[in-house]
Amino acid sequence: MIFYRFFLVFVPIFAQVTLNLNNIKRFQTVASDTVSTVAQTTVPLTTVPLTTVPLNCNAGCLTGWIPYSGNCYKKFEATVTQSEAEGYCSVYGAHLASIESGLEATAVKYLILESPFNVASGNLAGFLSSSQNAWIGLSKTANGAWSWTDSSEVLYTNLPSGESTTGASCATVNGTLWQPKSCSSTSTAYICKMAQSS
Image (tube, one colour):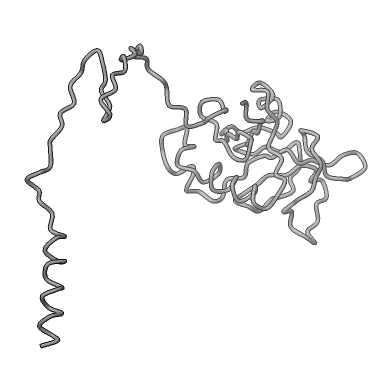
């Protein structure tokens, strides 16, 4: 008998939870000179001229440059010396890339060197090749210390340790590995870097 009373109390509560879909009202959106809100307040419709706004995926960078951490990067493919590469970068107001951390080195590898978005020629072989060395802005000063062409302080390097660098006063990057190289020799690519504009 106790079970029966519990069952009778439970059933009416369950029956009150049902949803009546027949009472849902349909609304239609119609273009007019006014817009009505749910509270039936009428607000005049403001006309906004239709314009085309270009989508800029390179926010703050020139077209074709890749933004990363407040800077813009671009890989160019040309057989040049480091000095020539620095000159070409300066045309854009940039310098050869200074790589200031391991994180930036990884970004340069994946965003710049191996990016399918960076293939100027239209064929994918350029970014799939891991053998391409690109000039960066690292070079030795007269006293033998490494410096960046943009005058930033050398806080990080990924030069091979214990390797002789006789005659190698500049550096290229291949992936995240840097290679000392004679400044008068040529490389088939170079990476420019400039500050992102706001």
